[in-house]
Length: 54
Image 1 (cartoon, rainbow, N blue to C red):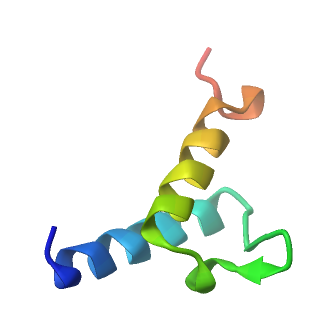
Image 2 (cartoon, rainbow, N blue to C red):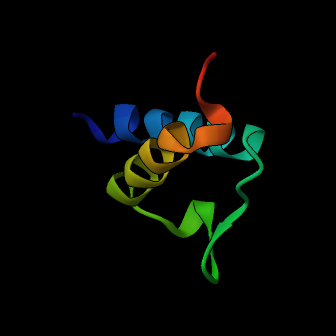
């Protein structure tokens, strides 16, 4: 993954997390997280019961 595509993916994940009401992880703002941390947090949000489809 190129640095440019990684940065685009980070922005996408931050946007998706904000849409789901996530603005921070612990004491760190989303923009401070690595791509791997953002991916992990998004997967966690996707598995949450309130986000499950009926």
